[in-house]
Length: 191
Image (cartoon, rainbow, N blue to C red):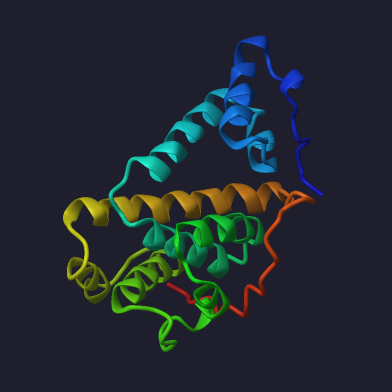
């Protein structure tokens, strides 16, 4: 059970109800994550603008973006993030077999060298925060400086999101449409 109540539109001050109106228009619903963050409308508004920029204003290929996000969700054992991004990942072209074997990304032939470089970066940044020169240099073979910065910001953002979801114990919506993949055993590395 969530540690804070989920807010509805009517719970917001009149001046902030447009936040929910805009989300309903864009997404057709209000997710539990947003309903919990709505306790701070100013920060919810900022988070939504930032999230929109990540989705629509970057040059990083959407497949790479979603593989990085799914990696963060898997490594942090955050079912909410993982499940929510399954559908997005499929819509942008991540193949089902890649989702099924994400845990084996290092050796599974479902992944390209470029995808492995992105997943490796997301893994190191999530588990250790610092990334090795070799991991960073591998990105340079496929991405320009702008795309690398975008990847760094995306991975950082979704690491922040899981650190909102988990402490607040935000629950997956009962009508989440994607199957709940086994997140697999994740060994935590000490830094």
